Amino acid sequence: MAVSHNPQLDFPTADPDVQRISLSAGMAAEVASLCDMGCVRQNNEDRVGVFSLPSGGALLVVADGMGGHAAGEVAAQMALDAMNEACVVDLAEPLPTALRLALATANRRILDQGEANPAQRGMGTTATALALAGEQAWFVHVGDSRLYRLRNGQLQQLSEDHSLVAEMVRGGMLSEADAVDHPCRNVIVRALGSDQELRPQISVEPLSVQMEDVFLLSSDGLHDQLSPVELANLLEAPPSIACLALVNLARERGGPDNISAWCVAWSKADRGLGARPRWVAGSSCEGRSPRLITRFAMDKVRAPAARSHRPPGL
Image (cartoon, rainbow, N blue to C red; front, side):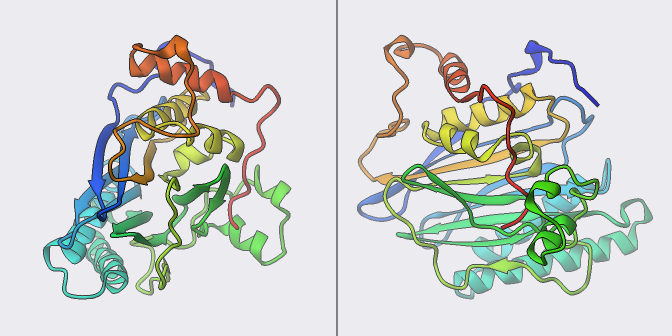
């Protein structure tokens, strides 16, 4: 169904939350997040969170709840709470182990609450988390939210979609082209609250991180509306601009789902907020408001031809 464009709906009501996180003597990360209801849904079942790690660094989480009003958002918040408890409040294990235990705890709690409360039975949530510690990073993931890394202008999806069509593509039963518009593309086969046996994707070894790397954590309300080229181009901007522009563009295309993003840019510790070496906004944006610069960024990356979505799964 076509969605008419209303320019007044383009910009979210809130600005991104922006922080600078010290990671080591020479490295820091500028992070920005935005969690938007979109243009169609009547409530927001997405949740984003940032938690300071005891030894320094931070844990960033995106959770996309499922189950309708008073259920999906509950499951998503339970995922964030379990992450905070296992990795921050009661951290007693190596970080990769704590991330795995956090998902197991959230899964058990969501299932138990659904059994105890019929109105919340069947609720669940995706969860994608990125832990920044020193000059290393780890991630844990379940569902169809995503983690991307932009390096030297090349965008790579690090997470694996746990959806029916993604499994069909990986199994050779469906082509990547056919997966884009498949009627079952939103059917998730793994999520918190869906099964007692949880099979998350976990980075056992730390992720390779280089200076100027950019990470994006997103719910499907974002990455389903933008092409990989558009994601990569906008991620060259400072995180606050990139985050707002990404969500704006998803809203401009109808915003049929809740839209969430974390943008994370690694840089030298002495660099100021908003500085990105590959980003040149142009002199016409000097001294202008962040929202005007964001509009400029959106105009730069709009593809003149039809968009080509990345197929759901690597």
